[in-house]
Image (cartoon, rainbow, N blue to C red; front, side):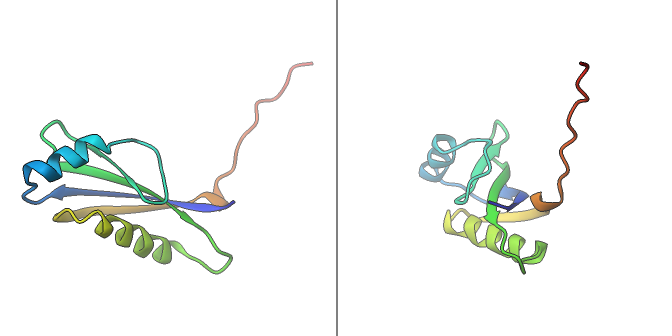
Length: 100
């Protein structure tokens, strides 16, 4: 399966105690389709990682919009600072040369 990996950096705006607890409980560094948060110690700045399936005609803008929508579904007030998209279809894996 080919995917885009989208990383969104931002700041939370006015998390209440329940939201703060929910962010702390659901934190993780993996790229998932629903997205995961990592955050600073004060839970004010965050990185949201989202994996978006890549169709043959999809581009980075489509992936960014999908990831932003996934972020919105979490319902936390926030400010976006940066969005970065990696098209995993373009990543080349270098294999080590084997000494035989």
